[in-house]
Amino acid sequence: SQSLFDIYSIQLTLFDVISSIPLQPIDRFVVAFRALTNRNVQFFL
Image (cartoon, rainbow, N blue to C red; front, side, top):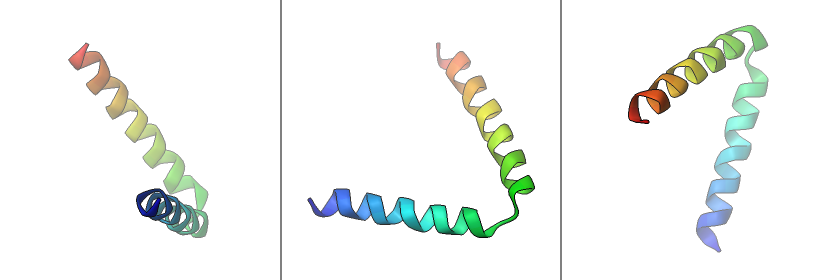
């Protein structure tokens, strides 16, 4: 469907943006994002 194609294209665009950025800031962002997500999950549970 159209919405699935939109999601797929958005993911491809995000992947292109991420792959064009140096890896170290992305790693820090992912670590911070995972820590925040884990904190929120524990909070809601």
